[in-house]
Image (tube, helix red, strand yellow):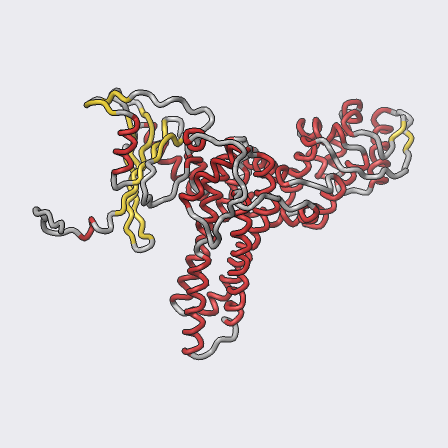
Length: 492
C-alpha cells in the first residue's frame, strides 16, 4: 500500500485500528480522534496533511511514523509519497464547528495563541458570525461554564479576527433595530473618545482646583455613558429571547455576563470619581472603556450578522414593537425601515405557539381577560409569573415598571432572563418551591434613590401542587416613611 499527504484519516484508522493509540502517543493532540464525533466529522474529511496541522507535527515526520508503525504491526510493504498537498479549508459545516470547538478547548487548556491561529488558518481560514455563536453554544451545552467561555471570548475573537475583518459589515436601513443599535454604537464611540481624554488627565492632574474640575467633567461623561444600559437591555430583552427561540443561545449566555462586568465596573468607576480617587479612576476607566469597545466589536462582527441571518421579518417587527418601552441611548431611530406586512398586536406580543386566552371563571366571581389585564396593570407593583416548567408566561405592563420588560420575554425560560452569575440563585429558589421546602424568598435593593422590595412567591393549587412562581417588585420608598395615621382625604 501507499500513504500520501492526501490519505484520509478515517479509512486508515478503520483499516488499522491500532494506529489510534499510536497517534495519541505520538502527539497528545491526536487524542481528539478518540472522540467518535471528531472521527465522524473531522476524521472523515481530514487528510494526513490536515492531521499534521491538527497534531502540530511536521507532515513528513507523520507520514514516516505511520508507515513505520503499519510495517511493524502487519509486516506489510508500505510506500510513502512525501509530496505536499495544497491545504484547502474544511467546507463541511459540522466538521468546521468541531475544529472551532477544538481550538477553543485548547485555549481553555492554556495553549499558545499563535499556533492555534495557524491551525485555524490551515483548516478553516474563514468563519462567519453564526458559526462563532454556534460554537460558543455547543461548548456551553458540552459542559464548559458560560463564565469560562466569557473569559475566553476576547482571546478566541483574536483567533478569528482576520476572518471577521474580511466580512462585509451588516447592512440595515434606518429604523431597523440593528441600524438603531449600530447608530447607538457610533454615539457611544464619541462619548468614549471624550472619556479617553479625561482619563489621560488623571495621570498628570495636580492641585485641588484642577482635580475638582476634572472630577466634574468625569461625572458628566459617566452620567452620559450610563445610557449604555438601555442599549444592553434591548439586547437582553429583545434580541436574545428571539434568538433563543430559534435555538441560538450562545450570545445571551456569553454577552450578558460581559454586560454585567461592564455595569459593575462603571459603578465602581463612579465611586472612584465621587470620592476623588483620580489614579484609581484613570486605571479602571481605561479598562472599562476597552471592555465597552470590545463589546461593540463583538456586536457588529458576531451578534448583528448572526441575528440578521437567523431572525425573520416578524421577529424584527417584534423587536421594533418592544424597544420603545426600554428606550434609546443617545439617538433617535430612523423612519425608513418598516415591515413589509402589518402584524396584529397579538402577533407582535405573543410567542409563535401561544394559545387563545380562556374565559376566566374565578373562584369569587368572573371577569373578562381584558378586565383582569387592566386590574393587574393598575396594581402599584411589577408582577411576573413563571409557570411550573420555568417558562415566563406573564408580566404586568405597567406604565412605570421598576424593571423593564418586553414582549419577547414571554415563552422564555426564566434562567435565560437572568445574568449567568445569578442563575444558581434562581435555580435554588425554584427547586425549594417545587420541593415544598419553601414558599417565599425576599430581597431588597436600593437603586436610583429608591428602596425596592422584591418577593418571589410559590403558587400552589388546592392540592398543594406547584403551579409556578410569582415575582412581585415594589417601590416601598414612600411606604417606609409612613408614621402615625391618616384618616381624612386631603385632595384639593
